[in-house]
Length: 87
Image (cartoon, rainbow, N blue to C red):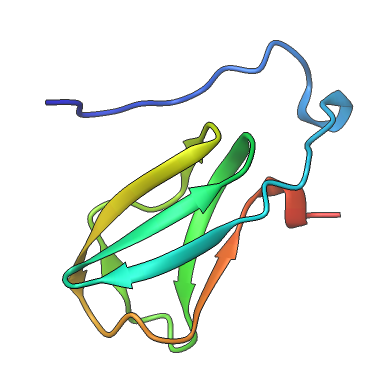
């Protein structure tokens, strides 16, 4: 079982060139599958009412997919953010 996982960038964040990860997600039953085309730092899945509780949020993601469980709330009108969106 993985308790924690992270990424280390050996550069100051302001000097690191983040590419657009093209984040997307799909709700499947009691979970959300999030996809990134490339590295995404500090991915956040948000609900418009901010009342969605997930098994994990604010995580780094290499390119590919990751599934998180919905603990509480309705997974509708979701927004995905990462450090790339901060400009």
